[in-house]
Length: 163
Image (cartoon, rainbow, N blue to C red; front, side):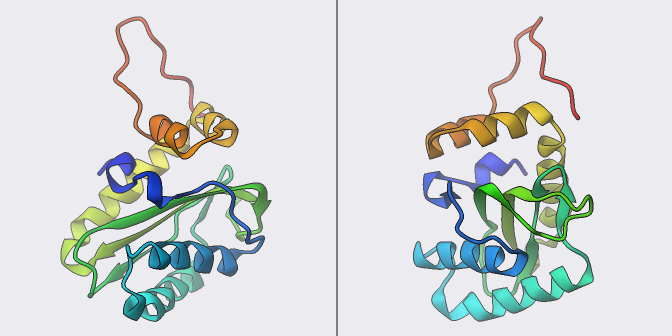
């Protein structure tokens, strides 16, 4: 599943306030809850599930990217949010580098198969250093969406090399 299909303008947080791992996850969940994308009654259960997942190993995958994710018995569709931190967040990432881009997503347990496909698509997109550079420089949520939903390349165009 493409990340751009999960996001809209209201699921992008350009300037995260959190500077640490867990407060960053709480900030994104609260952002979704305030917008009505997560029912307020589900907030605590989702945070608990995310905390259990993070206790296994950090979802900071390296290169300034983290992908916290979990399952929910109460959600009916996949919900995602994109958060950006210009300063960087200590996310206990695998490469110990600060995280600048967090893509948090919640998958309904009944749609378990979407979990790995979504995770793989996000990870693949963020291996490209040009994508990360553009996301860091983007000045609006519209621009972020355009970067995350690139148009097909025409013959002779280059896609940029992964880092």
